[in-house]
Image 1 (tube, rainbow, N blue to C red):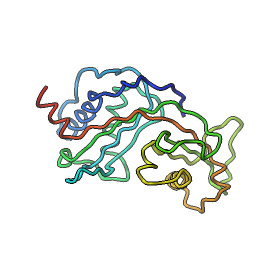
Image 2: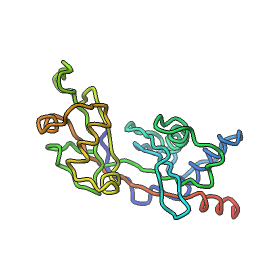
Image 3: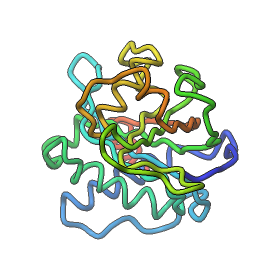
Length: 216
């Protein structure tokens, strides 16, 4: 996990969200990708790109979300993960051209990584969590100074509140998400390595992107 200081509050802007839509639209329609530089193009951040499907009532449902904890130049990272999250999230089929008008794109820049004292040392709605651990009975042993276990998972800051989870419920879900399907005990929770982080997030729906294209 990287360490970083918070970026300026104005780092994310509509140009970044438009760029993600431009990249996906070009890919799905077999066109050349967008040209030109976006703001803060060469500044590096860990980031996630999320695609949601927007229903006729305006509610959103996850359609794909993938990112990286390795800091990437912003333009390069958005271009790469806009496509990976749309087309290669193993939980979903690839997004199709027909779905474009129903999409919402959200970008999260991850900042302010900190070690947690224990698995509850973070705040709901403020921090995202990254956990890693060696499952019971695996025989794995961390070398001195090692900080990563064989299983890992993360939840962005908005996930636990959206699901109505307590901190313990979020930890238990992250343990399962990491690939552990045994009984989650207090001892297991206390054994995991947890880091907390913050996120600068912004979103845009297709109708906003399409309107911007017509006016440009």
